[in-house]
Amino acid sequence: MIKINENFNKLQASYLFSDIAKRVAAHQQAHPEQDVIKLGIGDVTRALPDACIQAFHAAVDELASDGSFRGYGPEQGYDFLREAIAKGDFQSRGCNVEADEVFVSDGAKCDTGNFQEIFSSDITIAIPDPVYPVYVDTNVMAGRTGEAVDGRYSGLVYLEATKENDFIPEIPSEPVDLIYLCFPNNPTGATITKQQLKKWVDFAKETKALILYDAAYEAFVQDENIPRSIYEVEGAREVAVEFRSLSKTAGFTGTRCAYTVVPKECMAYTEAGEAVSVHSLWNRRHTTKFNSVSYPVQRAAEAAYSPEGRAQIQELVSYYLNNAAYIRKHITALGFDCIGGDNSPYIWIDGKMDSWEFFDLLLNKAGVVCTPGAGFGKCGEGYIRISAFNSFENVKEAMDRISNSI
Ligand code: MLT
Image (tube, rainbow, N blue to C red):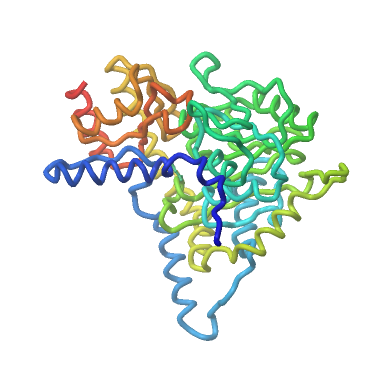
């Protein structure tokens, strides 16, 4: 008899964004006349930058003749892309990251979800609350938690991010082995200073823990004093893995390209206390389970690092940040407290009511989709998240409709 992985029974019925998509589809079926504006999942709406499109086309043409055709590429990604990333995203900003520490992949969702696989099933995990649900769900699937009681899984250490601590979680008082951090934060849009991040790095060093640092939204950081990478902090190479994505910056949500940096200094330990390189473990896992991203996609991603590509991406980021500023201004004028939206595409709003109720109210009365904060954890209850990823016209229309509905 084929048996299931019982850990799946501990999960919520469906993944947050699938659940929302189902509710929206049902609403659209019931109200076909209403033009729904989606400011829920952070999915970009603007076209790929022209530099990426040109490179994409050229690479497809290369595949059209035997002489320039390419089959399997290196599992970790082509050198041309790994080098462009190491130079463009890190070395140019004074961070020491080498090309062979970059693992190209098809998404930060997959990488943040898969990375836990290389660690023991009995480690203690620290996870912020609220949080991108992938970190929690993948650890539940791996059997690192007990059942969920009142919205929280036993066995996890929750790092609460609330108004009281400016949405920056405190260092836990108990020992933990694996720590998830995300800045600029999804969902709150909060950012962290170098001094605050240094405390986490020092804590990880003292306790031989590892930080999984999700920096998928770093391109939205405008303030020069806010770190874009954890490697801006001294000592981070020994204790931190960083995840990045071209999804929200260069518009690759559908095209798929991301990467993970695993410094060679990062170590994890055997039962006997012997240090093992996390880089070699991840390389082993990656080469076994993944064949990288297609050649044209990697060429398109490489073009994002060209001077033209950079300028076009900056324009996209500014466009979405302009939307974010507009949303924030209007929501504040309606009397709601919110954060985010300045160095982040997300605005985190204290709705002063049950967050699914607020979600239903916006959908039913305004035809606007947001994300209920409770879907990101217990501390998200009472909040909603509005995403700035849409056309300015739609954002403007959505804000008008919300003003008229509340
Ligand atoms: C979000 O809306 O939180 C993200 O778009 C989800 C994702 O990147 O998978």
